[in-house]
Amino acid sequence: MSQVLTTTDLEGALPLIARGKVRDLYEVNDKTLLFIATDRISAYDVIMENGIPSKGVLLTLCTRTWFKILTDALPSLRTHFITLDLPPQIPESLRPTLQNRSMQVRKLKIFPIEAIVRGYITGSAWKEYQKSGTVHGIKVAAGLQESQEFPDGPIYTPSTKAELGDHDENIHPDQAAKIVGERYASKIESLALALYKTAHAYALSRGLIIADTKFEFGHDEETDEIVLVDEVLTPDSSRFWPASSYQVGRGQDSFDKQFLRDWLVKEGLKGKEGVRMPEEVVKKTEEKYREAWEKITGGQ
Ligand code: ATP
Ligand code: MG
Image 1 (cartoon, rainbow, N blue to C red):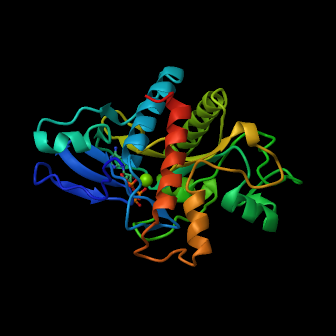
Image 2: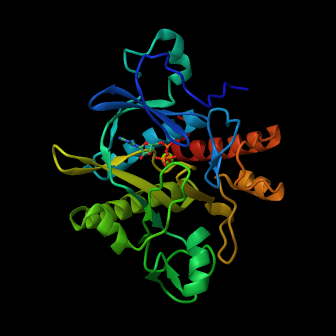
């Protein structure tokens, strides 16, 4: 089994800025961050005690590939990606562990919303729709079935970006506009929709449906540009469904954490801290992440 990295220790080579649920962020200089994806996994907003082997590498390589695909398709797109190369401050002894799970990225001020785009009705959107006929307060077509593609095209359904330990909250785009300011809100919305459409078409040609996904954006204060940041279109930030078994009117098999979530619910461990996943759950989950990575990148 490959090495599992659940936390990083750069032995003082760079200052630690933040630890998210999955990533550890270090400062390379005042403009650049080292963005390291560990093998941590969270479900229902709780981080598991043990990790998923190779997960951080798979997420990093997926993101890097998507940045290439998206900038080729949308040449005006700006991303935070600089290089997969490690900065010179990292000592030789740490390089093998950090290689391919780290990106140097531009350090930016992050707009405090999650720019979610949904092409298909599922998850919390399906629950809300069944109750009220709306999705994030937006009125959508009547008579939709579970997992159906939105007939009028994908919709922008932002959420708040909660502090570590809190839950993100679904909000109406009007409320997102209040949070980020009118000036940026419509740009973020149209950019998120364009990114989703491009990615959806690409993934479909490789047998994957992107049911929904979450983007984050930063602000380049020097140029006033909106920049695509964070991880993109990974199994952590998206729902991927195999196109071959897709069927409207029921939940779908997904490449994401469904196996882990189902196990947590079955064992009565949903939302509990300090849970250690058994080998079988680790293996199945690793397989799903690897399968998604292979489908998207062709294994590179
Ligand atoms: P959080 O812990 O912030 O609630 P998370 O658990 O999803 O979110 P991770 O994915 O583990 O966090 O870590 C990524 C963090 O880095 C996110 O908070 C994200 O907003 C932030 N981030 C991503 N790209 C950049 C960037 N270019 N500059 C500054 N911060 C960034
Ligand atoms: Mg994240």
